[in-house]
Length: 146
Image 1 (cartoon, rainbow, N blue to C red):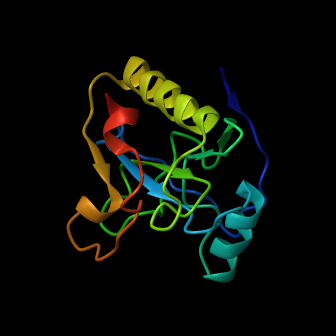
Image 2 (cartoon, rainbow, N blue to C red):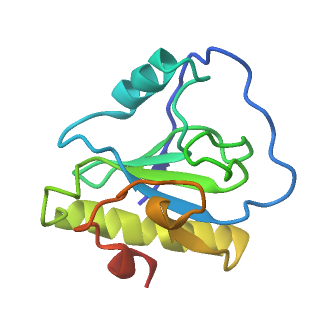
């Protein structure tokens, strides 16, 4: 497996994170089907620089680069120094994650751990100041970070 590079047109330059990421925040797109380009467009429409996540995991099991890993994220209030991972799907409604996506999520967790060592993992809803159900009640968080 690999991280697929992707080119985006940013609204503004991205800021560089100082040091390694403080942790990883896990998200779902809250859309049954979408693409990294769609998320980039949504985030631009919010007035942001562009896609706020560092990685996007499709239901087919592809891991797509969002922001570069050196960049601050925009995915979680108060956690710009954390990596953001978003999964295609709405796991408040969808009860099962496709096997290919689940395996890609496990691979990505290992990739991040190998690169940065053991850093904290949190669901978006577990982060302070973030009132959300993300990544959803059916998101297989324990299976991915195991």
